[in-house]
Amino acid sequence: MTSDQIRQVILDILGRIAPDEDLTDLDDARPFREQMELDSMDFLDIVMELRKMYRIQIPEEDYPNLNTMGGTVEYLLPRLKDVPVGA
Amino acid sequence: MVAVESQSIAFGRLRWGVPLSDLDRIVITGVGLTAPNGNSLPEYRQNLLVAKSGVVNYETRYMGPVLAGVCNFDELRYQKKKDLRRGTRAGSIAVYCANEAVKDSGIDWPNVARENVGVYIGITEHGNVETENEIYEISKFEYDTKVWSHHHNPRTVANNAAGEVTLNMGITGPHLTLGAACAAGNAGFIQAVQMLRLKEVDLAIAGGVSESIHTFGIFASFAAQGALATHEDPTKACRPFDKNRNGIVVAEGGGICTLERLPDALKRGAKIYAEVIGYAMNSDAKDFVLPDSNRQAECIYLAMKRAGISPEDVDIVSSHATATEQGDIEEAAALRRVFGNSPKTFINNTKSFIGHAMGAAGALELLGNVPSFDDGIVHATINLDDLDPRCALPNLVINQPREIGPVKCILNNSFGMLGINSVVIIRKFQG
Image 1: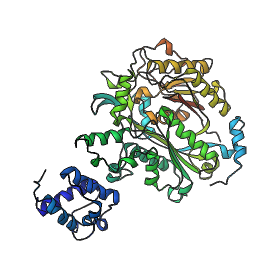
Image 2: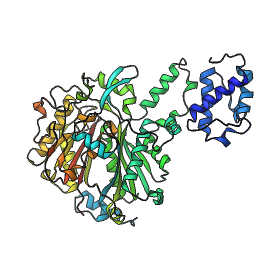
Image 3: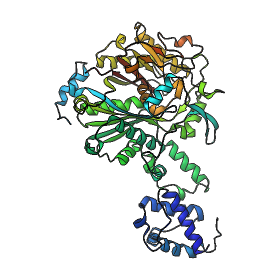
Image 4: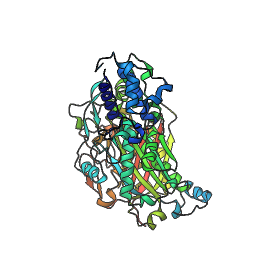
């Protein structure tokens, strides 16, 4: 997957776990939690969704990498670059 | 709100049926409900009077088509989509009903001291739906428990439904979800009355809820027991007291009230639906599933003793009968024993319309009869085409509602597995 494709995957996940939010103008550089209602349980949903979709195990010490959209894409790109879209 | 009074005096008066002080008089001041045939008391009542059923064909996991009472309330009236995703169906039903009850009560909710509000919600079972869902989910991942949801525990803790109400409404007083099998709706009301009389809370939000149609296990277990109703016409499937009854129709729903001490209700000029004048709970101590008419009758007598009334003072008995063979026979025996010589007492059954709403049953069945205080009509028990002679009861209101004149007192039965019995008696408020 490309960076853009990974970003879309994360947007889709956010759309499911925070269905009341408008994600149209999400700023990739700002923390998710500054832009939407997202608590620790929601954050774990992101991790869980990635685990289910791509069998990725994200260790807890890496969670800070997932605070922003930009950081999340950067963190996931080397781990998902060989994974086809929709896998 | 009123000041605390001597609890020992209040207890003594309650126990022996001596007239209660006004501070011990508990009244229902708001009603919120969702039933398979109505999402407000007026709608629900109207459909009980015109025999509109809420039982439909329903697909359940693994088992395929079954019959069920399904609710269609506005889930998003008081919750966000995210709340629905994170919480449970029981919680959502409870949140809807609790908000509707508070709104109906007319209480100045923004200025209510939330630490003095108690939430007491009865439930038959909890956690089956959520656990089944998780097991189904991990089955798609070769039962890898690493994909088991972190939401599972908060969804399945036994206080879930009442807890979700406190989260939604900012209530910081006590909350309990009371596990009481199918006696749970009454149990919620009883807990509220007790806590108000003990002055533990100043306002109680109480009743019962059910999400049971979302677990295949409850259907499968009743089927294995030979107690799951089947019928080509879903609306005719639930047939209490009828010779051709063949079991239970599982339903979801909720019935929640606001309850207050009488002086508080009067002070704010509240609309008073009814006064709770008696209640009782006891145990059969006999069998896991089979009921016992003797203990049921004792429970009814105890509630009447506490209320200071006799059988002939009861205008309407809302029966529990679930349309199982033995259950209906046992309750009919209990009712004949207590009300056999009470020619002005009329008996009906609500499950025949909506199925068995489990934890909500006791609450919904009581609430559907409350409007009788105003209209003098007893709603019927429907689908009773061929009365089982073992269930013959005096003044059973069959298939058509009946006008009986002024109604002053209603008694509500609600019984459950493991031999739990509950009775609540309400009276038209007379000042």
